[in-house]
Structures are given as C-alpha cells and as structure tokens.
Image (tube, rainbow, N blue to C red; front, side, top):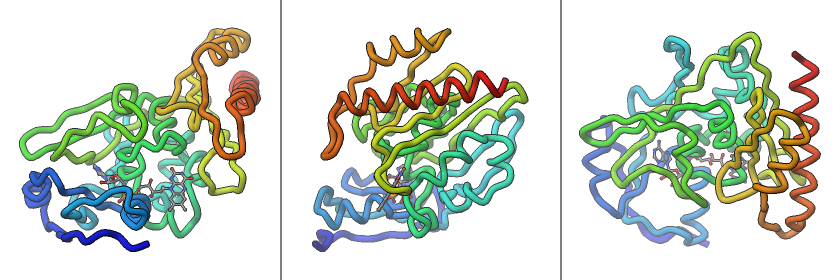
Length: 263
Ligand SMILES: Cc1cc2nc3c(=O)[nH]c(=O)nc-3n(C[C@H](O)[C@H](O)[C@H](O)COP(=O)(O)OP(=O)(O)OC[C@H]3O[C@@H](n4cnc5c(N)ncnc54)[C@H](O)[C@@H]3O)c2cc1C
C-alpha cells in the first residue's frame, strides 16, 4: 500500500521545528523506520511530516556529570558502536543488537523508539530499569520526566502536542552495578516475544504488557511471586499468555542467577 498524501518540511532550527509542530495535524519524522511503515499501512494520516533529522544539538553521546546524555537523533547503529555506551551504560549496550536488523539500526533513532513506546521494544524497558530521565522541549520550556512516568499505555507517552523528546540521560554504571539483558524472539532481530532488562534488583519486562513492567523482590521466590501477581501478558499469534508468563519466569531466574553470581 502507499501512504496517504502529506506535506513535508525539513526545518533548519529547533525554533522553526516548534513553529511547524504548532500544527495539530503535524507529526515528527526521525529515522522513519516505524512511522513510514505505519503511513504505508494507513494506520496514520498526518497532514505534515516535520523531518527533524539534521537539527543541530539532537544527536550524539556525551558524559555530563554522573549521567550519559544521548541525543534523540542518535541512531541504534551509533549506540552499538559506541565504546562509551558499552563502558558506561552496559545494559543498553547489551540491548542494542536485539533492535531490529542492521539496515533499520542504521536509520532508526533512540528518540523515535522511546517516543513510539512500542511495548515490545528494548529501549523503554532499559530506560525504566536504569531510571533514565527524558528531556522534553516545547517552543517555550524544557522539562524532565522520569522513565517510570513517561510510558503511559500502549504506544502512549507523556509527550504533549507540540513537544519533542530531545535527549535521554542514563546514570553512569557504578562498579558494583550488575545488569543483564535477555530476550526471546522467533528470529534474532524480530520484536521480542518476551524480554527482560535487569539492573541490580530492578527487573523490567518487555512484550509483557502495554508498557514496560517493573518487578522487584528481595529474593528470587519473592520476585517470582510478584511476577505471577503482576504480569498478565497478552497472547500473540504464536504464544498464549500462559506460555509468555512461563518464559518470563525462565528469564527472571536466568537474570537473577547472572546478577547474583557475578557479584
Ligand atoms: C522490520 C522492523 C523491525 C523492527 N524491529 C524492532 C525491534 O526489534 N525492536 C525495536 O525496538 N524496534 C524495532 N523496530 C523499530 C525501529 O527500531 C525504529 O527505528 C524505532 O522504533 C523508531 O525510530 P525512528 O527514528 O525510525 O522513528 P520514526 O519512525 O521516525 O518515528 C516513530 C514515532 O516517534 C515519533 N518521534 C520520533 N522522534 C521523536 C522525537 N525526538 N520526539 C517526539 N516524537 C518523536 C514520530 O512522530 C513517530 O510517531 C523495527 C522496525 C522495523 C521496520
């Protein structure tokens, strides 16, 4: 299928982008790896696409105090190749290779993935596990939102009309921190059937609900009990809810053992 007709603008500055985003029927275009397929499938029909690629200051990885700031336009491939990310945010580094395939990783951005809030995506779960902070701007102001408050529902976030996610800040991993990313997918690079971003005692599941689901417990038994109380994954074409719950338990135990034995 072909996309419905839309106008296209590529502003040269953030101020010009915010002017264009004042149109309630405009949509931000970043890497286009989710938006363009959704237009082609006629799941969305914006009047105007505001292409933010090339806007200054929205890309790159930098160390700021005790945080690693990642610009929204930083691609999955840039994260994958970054030595800073593998050293300072190892959970994210483990997750990136699970995001789609190389061609998609070359264009898709971290900001696009977080703003989309697909419940089966890797970064939202990592952001909640690591208690990342989202930097959001509109024409007039900037605000900071904790990852735990950002994901509101299925493909629904705290972003308001006219706002842009400009960056995300992850805490630098301490020497004593332990993290592990695990995912089960039909083929490597497919969206997860179920996945787990685990950081110390925070276990965050993806593909298990309408948003990332945080499970905590002071022992494996308590975490397993919290899992069966709080996780009610929707079935997909191939896996029942009970199968997904079982697989979530398997991942939890693996992650728990990895984290506790590497201390
Ligand atoms: C075949 C295939 C397999 C895939 N597999 C996976 C996978 O396994 N895991 C995974 O996580 N993803 C997967 N993806 C999605 C891919 O990672 C996308 O790149 C990503 O989800 C969106 O990033 P983007 O830069 O392409 O955003 P776009 O497609 O340009 O935008 C996505 C949405 O976010 C909004 N948006 C984008 N940037 C911003 C911003 N800075 N501020 C506010 N709103 C913004 C757009 O308006 C749009 O609604 C897959 C995609 C395809 C086509």
